Length: 314
Ligand code: ADP
Ligand code: MG
Image 1 (spheres, helix red, strand yellow):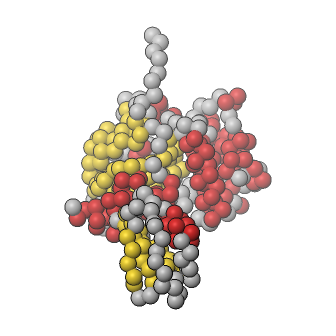
Image 2 (cartoon, protein in one colour; image 1 turned 135 degrees about the vertical axis):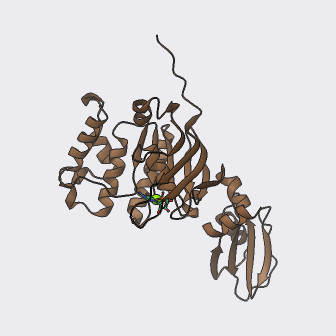
Image 3 (cartoon, helix red, strand yellow; image 1 turned 45 degrees about the vertical axis):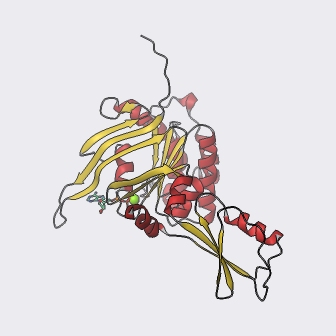
């Protein structure tokens, strides 16, 4: 029987996902996920945001098939993980948080082994392209144990891509990495997403989720607090403030983008607006055009803790 395949609206659908890690030694049992429902829209760059210990890696590792769930349903690209394990696994590529690398393989060999594990036929392999993409062409034939931490991360991203997954998952890809690596990651995430790949990334940096993601889910203590398009979420989450020092200047402020409120604060001017719509540079441009001198400019925005408080206070 042949059947035409319509791609699912949800790249991932989790229903009542629970995970309790068993007690071991002194450590008591830990309920890491307490019944999470989550839908990741196809084609999005989706942020899973939460502080350390929230349960992000547990969720990701269940998707990756590395951790067994305690209860609930996991659908990846429309395939139930328990019913169609092979198809659901083929649809997803995961770059783990931990640096797990075989030290005795070269990057090229690692990718070939990985392609073998996923049964990618030789003529469908794109090893050299992936090495180029992640910036490892020059190290393709060095032993992985000689790679720097950053290069190991590049290799982990490369490994996640060998089987051309529909969904790419990055677990805290930028925690503790240098600027060059961060830029490589974001450039590639945008590029792969533009080609149709759904991307899920976890982070505990609000700023990063704001910059990168179309939609954000926040989890804390194993429960989902909220899931919304990034703009909506930030608008509810709090406001941003720009503090400028105009020096001795006492003129009148020019017209500013709608929604910006102003206040004098010890010789400085505080400009405040809800997060998620206006960008700081728009406000700065308006001030500059109005001839307001800016001796010093600083911004204030809520951190993740403030956002949790605001969103859970309601
Ligand atoms: P995050 O990635 O958001 O920092 P994790 O999913 O790593 O959170 O951890 C969630 C909770 O589960 C934490 O309290 C953590 O200590 C616990 N945990 C994670 N992995 C294990 C494990 N293998 N055994 C026992 N507890 C674990
Ligand atoms: Mg983690």
